Image (cartoon, rainbow, N blue to C red):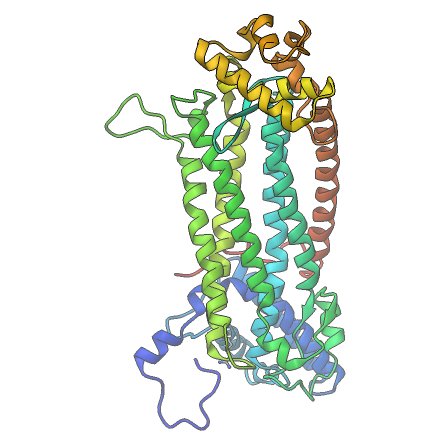
Length: 488
Ligand code: ARG
């Protein structure tokens, strides 16, 4: 059913109808459209467009429809263009002409913008919960490796020894920034477009602030033209999800490297790896590869919406219908990835022997030699030069820096004493980096405690928001499960 027709003498062509159709992806917004319709209905009663009895009748029809959709009793038909059409069709079947009264004073333009904001605010809580689970997995794994020595890398070359827990914990910081970004985005997205009408505002339900409050938004829109055409919140959401994808892809890349035979650091759990149909010995890091691979589509979804928005005239244009699929796809992709990556991270076993064997390889203690000389009063630039000559000497003699003799060191500089060998151990190199954020086990323990506190507080905020949003539904069964990938 179409929501217009008075001035048309023929129906739409099949090709036009097929092109226009969005119900196969916007149907998942139905529960949100119904609660926003309820808010609108209350406004219509207040402004005397509807009598109290009519308002009551419409509200209970909306509530019932929401429950029926949740039970799968109502679904779009092939002739339905979008979710608004389905809802009006079913309401008309159930309450007759009264259904048409609900359309007063609003437009699909302010409706769809409201629906998408409501949906995404709700969905972001689920996304944050997934991120927090992954952060917890990293903290747990890092705690198991507070004293596992390993080489740190720059340029993918051995750089300086570190403890492996420090290497793992770094991901928790990046992911916590993602959580923070979503938390801040949540507030910016809390602006209600309802009441903006097609573009100019509405005379009939002139209380946008009241609807905003009912829908648990922070405020109503300050400009009706901006309100119906603004998709910054969707673009920002796509940026945040793309950046999460990039973080996950960097995690994936590490897991792929670490589980290779050449590294031999990580043993993937059977539950989070796959075999090969032809090579029986294979165990492949597919979860990590999919994390790396799927970051491509997350970036693509962001690009797609930005290009749609570029130079788009104000206010509503049908181009804006293209906002939903990328946003839904990025959300679905991450909700699929996050639990798998959390499982992979938590269940991987690390081979401490293999890791520590390489901790000093590649002359990774060269900085210790330079720092030793600095402590003896030599300027770092000169100390760096002397240490470099020690590396060259060791290379020539085919030994490590620890294996050079004191005479070797003294041939390079007289300030070297036998205590040089005290600093030439992984343990001392690592333990000496004990300032905040450093790799020393003591600093790592402090870091993990701090991360634990941040995790707990982010969880508290998210639980609070989730339960606040649950009030939207006003009952326990209210919302249909956000039916991802709804109707095809
Ligand atoms: N399906 C449309 C969308 O997602 C709903 C708004 C349609 N508005 C209009 N004036 N045709 O953007």
